[in-house]
Length: 259
Image (cartoon, rainbow, N blue to C red; front, side):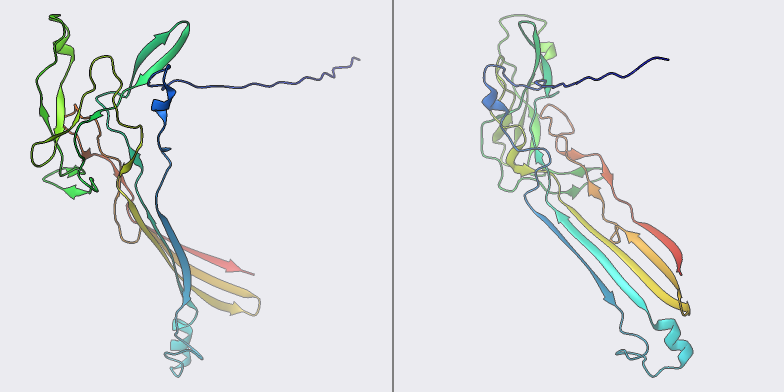
């Protein structure tokens, strides 16, 4: 026989600094959280349909009809949520940056050099695609001077984003800089989402202490898509396009006996 008892204390902490834009200037990382939503409106309710005995309609109908139309209830859940904050980037958002023995990664953003259209962003369906920034488009700009190195121009795509008048509003940051736009910048948000779930149920008393309930639930009753965020890479030929969507209408039926 032996005594196998032991005691111990284990503690730990993790600090992550994997997306610093500049380890020497952490103020550049200030921005809205990805979960930030400026507006969230939700409402729900239930309504007993006014049919059957002692109700507004069909209270004097034959008993069989009253049994069919009584006990129906309509319920709903409504929600409208504004979009998530977006970040304009000049390609992949993170590239390696080493400082001493600690590994960091810089997160470059685009440079704002003009006035972004007020309220930029809105879902518009095109011919086989969905565009979000319809007032903005990308075009090629002259390459900067790379000091005569013939290998560097081939690795640099210098596209700019212009408004409808052709004025440049977004461009790639200069070499050695991290861009002047905020990560998850205020005022530039992705698509909002609208949801309406409905349910219709009926209770039927089959005995003094037994109740039979039938119910139909419709999730996303309006069958509206919930659009994903657009492509915010200013060097991409599909800048501003939305390629993901979720939220098909789903209807389920169920029955229950309470006793």
